[in-house]
Image (cartoon, rainbow, N blue to C red; front, side, top):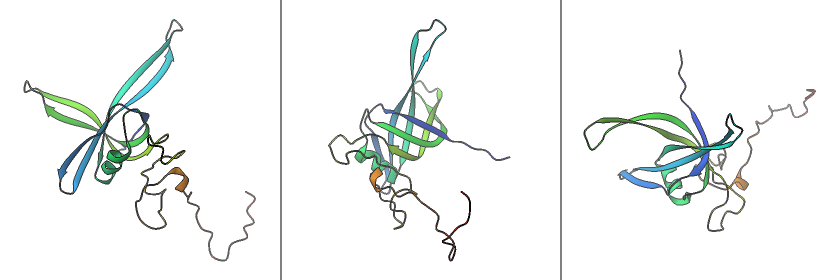
Length: 160
């Protein structure tokens, strides 16, 4: 039986990215994301709850995070949930849940006024995919993919 591990988060960045160079060609960026939930309790009182998630971005994604992401920005992240094992100062083995990001979209405007009204997206399918490179751009650069019609079939008689 196949397994599936995927998590989707939309929240706000809780701190500026922490960047670590693992080697000359490997980099990791760690951030925390706050996901807020509002609900009414049994007494009808509005309750707010915040869940915090650790998220890691590797290599090219880490470069984009380092350049564009700052505390407080809204972000959309898709990735895998991982269990990280470590030993604390007292020598006890501890476990931590972490999201390993696979794709992300920065929501909202950049702080410095550039890229007004846009978002930076890391999807390999959205930006400049026709040129075959993985450049990053604004939402205004997005070209929705439409499949080409088969040759010689430009006039379609389908009712929809």
